Length: 251
Length: 243
Image (cartoon, each protein chain N blue to C red):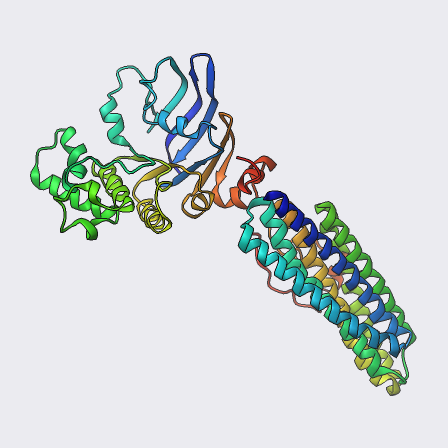
């Protein structure tokens, strides 16, 4: 199995405080990797390293390597826009822009300089279909995206991320602000999309991790404690501390 | 909250062990009543088996509640699921012991074959030793001892084959032992089945401690006594190891 991304000994410090202590983890292509761990363990920080979202924070220092298709994304002269086209992101709170659904989904393409109206039309439709929100939006493409329900907004955001055809999509607790039905719809969407894209998802919902992920990585206090196939992690993890966390004994 | 879960798990473990002790007693009583021609003891134990069956339901209900309400995963999941599955095997052992007692009632007053009864006593001793060992291995998460159950199982199987031959020879020599012989056949078969269930219990001990799930029989090296009987007994098809 090919690894589309590889983190090698990633350390991150805010000034003197080291938040990630050297994380090495591979992300297999077209799989969903769940990052789990107690609050403050560094999983979101680590996720944000994967498309250089932490760069602008004052006093931050990141060492180690993060390879995307074999090339370090922290190399000099890297085109950040090109990186984020390849590594998209969906946040905890749905963040549609305050304009029509169509323009939301077309946004990334337009930023990337695509002017072909026919191509944009086609991508918008495809992406909305892939994110399983087409049926609910096809007659309302000019409606403000913020007028949709939370679950629908999140799927519009997924469609927006998919429109630029990324290699990897980062998901930072994508369903924690949603009700169980909307969460289930997002999960179902992800299950379908896994065949085409690689997902890396931070989640506090362990049942969600067990349902949708192929691989699970457990982080604690800025360290990677254990990672492995989901079935192994949930049935027979190698470390007792992993079992204790999964059973909610701390965190 | 998780203290409550651990407490419930502890209680479940204790109940499972208590059931194991009761079942062990049932095997003893079942065969002892048969060999000693003790019809009264046999009738008593039929009552005791009902208690074991009730205990099994209590354990199963508690395990299912824990699964549904606490949704354990990883180590906790393996503990609960192995109890749930092992309880079924223990209950079957109890039922088999009970069936041995039923044969006591049936055979009372008929001519017997002392040599066969000696083998039955030996097989009983063997399965009881195995049951105690496997229950201890369960408590101590002792995978090594669990795997050793195969050796004991091979011995039981060997005695089973030997007893069969003795019974056939006995009937040929004196047809008056036919009634007892019919019961002997049932009993040695039941003891062999008990041994099978003990091997199943051993595989749940292994699953509980390692997460490896496979049927022990035929998955490990064969002992010499198994080889001897191989020609006569076709091997059951077994699943391959899975995780």
